[in-house]
Amino acid sequence: MSIDIASPHLFSEFRNKISSRRARVGVIGLGYVGLPLALLYVEQEFPVTGFDIDQNKVQALTEGKSYIYRIAETEIQEARAKGLTATSEFSLLAEMDAIIICVPTPLNEYHEPDLTFITNTAHAIAPHLRAGQLVMLESTTYPGTTEEVLVPILEKENPNGLRAARSIPSAPPANEFYVVFSPEREDPGNTTVARHDIPKVIGGLDSRAADLAAALYGSIFRRTVQVSSPAAAEMTKLLENIYRCVNIALVNELKLLCLRMGLDIWEVIAAASTKPFGFQPFYPGPGLGGHCIPVDPFYLSWKAKEWDFRTRFIELAGEINVGMPYHVVASVASALNQQKKALNGARIMILGVAYKRDIDDLRESPALTIIELLQKEGAEVSYNDPYIPMIGKGRRYNLQLRSSALEKLDAYDCVLIVTDHSAYDYAKVVKEAQLVVDTRNATKGISSSKIVRC
Image (cartoon, rainbow, N blue to C red; front, side, top):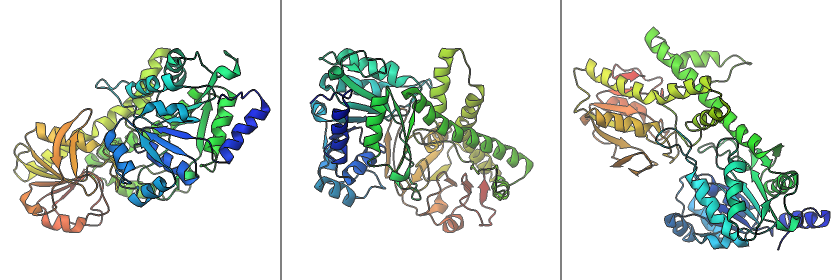
C-alpha cells in the first residue's frame, strides 16, 4: 500500500497504524544494536522481522536462543511468542512498513571509513523498496552518509523509479519513500539507564520523514529529539563519542605524566571529582574499545579533509588512545625486567579481553592489540574472560585462543589485568600470582610488592 503523506487524512492513517501496533518493523543487523532495538518493538507489540546475513544468528533466534550475554534466552523466547521472526531472506523487506538499518561501520586497515556493510545493505533493500516505506539508518558514520551514499543507491536501484521524499518534492507522493538517520545510543553493560529512557535523535531527509520516524520511535522511547537533517543527526552522534574520546585521551596522557612524577592518577581523579561543578570524571585504561569511541574520531577526520580542514585536536586524541596498548606492553616488559626476566619467552595470563567490564563485546578491544604485540615480542599468551570463551578470527586479527581456567596462576610470569570484570577475586589473584600488572586500578586497596599499576 502506497501512502500519500501529503494528504493529512492518510498521514493520520499512518499514525493510527503505529498507535494500533500494525506497522510492520524490519530490523537489518541483529547484533548489539539491532537485536535490543527489535526487542523493544516486540515489547510494544509491533510485528517485527529481523534480517541478518549471519545464519547462525538467524538460527539461534529461531530456536529461542540468545548470543548476547546481557539478553537472556527467556527474553528471546518471550519475543518469539509475541511474533518476532528472524530471516536471511531480504525479499521479505517488501512487506515491511519501516526498515531500520543497524549494521557495522568499521575502519579499514588505513583507519578510513569502511561503509561496505551500509552499501551492501542498500543494494539488498533497493530491489524490494516500495512507495511509502520508511528507511532509517542507525549505524554510526560521518555526516553526509545518508544523503550521499544510502539515498543514491536506493533511488538508482529500485525497479519502480521511487524517489526519497524531500522538502522540495522530486516525485509525486505516491512514488516516494522516506529516509531518516537516527543514531544508535546503546551502552552495553549499562544497567542504570533503561533503553527506552535514552532520548532518540532523529534527522529526516524532510519533515514528513522526521514526523513518521518520531511517531514510530516515540512508541518505544520516552523522548524523541528532531534535528534539521540527517547530517545534523550524524554529527550529533560523532560529537557524543568524540567528547568521550578526547577526555579519555586527556586522562590517559595525564596518567603517563603522573607515572613519571610518582603520582597516583586515580587518587587525583577521585579528588577532582569532589568538585560539584565544572568537572566530569573520565578514567584511564589500556586503550579504547567498542564500536564507536575508537572509530568515530577517524570518521570525522576523514570527512573533514573534503572541506580542506584538519581536525588536529581530535587526531591527537586518537593518537594518544591508539598508543595505550603499546604503553601497556612496555610496562609489562619493564616489570618483568625488574624481576630479571625477559618478555621473550615469558608466560603471560591476561585477565579480561572484552572492551569493558562485565560485557561479552570484543569489538575494537585493546586486549586484541595487546595480545598481538606480546606475541610479536615472543611472549606465550593465555587469557581468561568469563564472557568470551574464544577469540577466533576477526576483520583485523586471527588469534584462535580459548579462555583458560584461572588455575595455577603462579605458573605464569605475569598476570595482566586488561578488563576489570567484577567476577574476579583480585585479592586472590594477587596472592597467587608472581607479578600483577594492573591497567584498570582493579587492585585498588590491595597492598603488595607484586603489583605494578600502569
